[in-house]
Image (cartoon, rainbow, N blue to C red; front, side, top):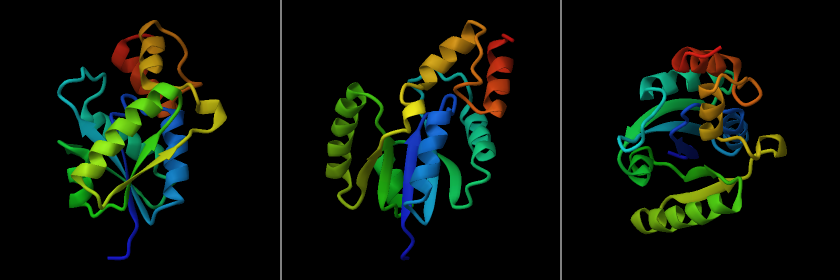
Length: 162
């Protein structure tokens, strides 16, 4: 199988324009890019895994080589199951780098066949995070600068603010 498959894992709670920017750019590097929603029971999520998968399918529908999936457990094991070439991660600030390099080294030990590819978001998405978006939505702020319209609508419904 000569297919170069990349996996972009994350919680995507909610998916932001920053995520979408990285998805579009990473999709150019692989024959197939799998957006992999992690099922993390430790985190208190705003959206269910199924809701996040559905939102991601909607916002990536115009990227032909993207598929959306979910997984539980170690990301490198999911990568091994899918015969992935690389894991795609986003780096925004220095603290992201410190976290990502630790994870990348651990993943390399667990599965030397899969590399970690870190991409920086475009400048206008550099400081967008799901956490900030959730907080803005919680207090009734306008999140349309940070997330696609479909996501903004679902966020308004979920947190009960206009």
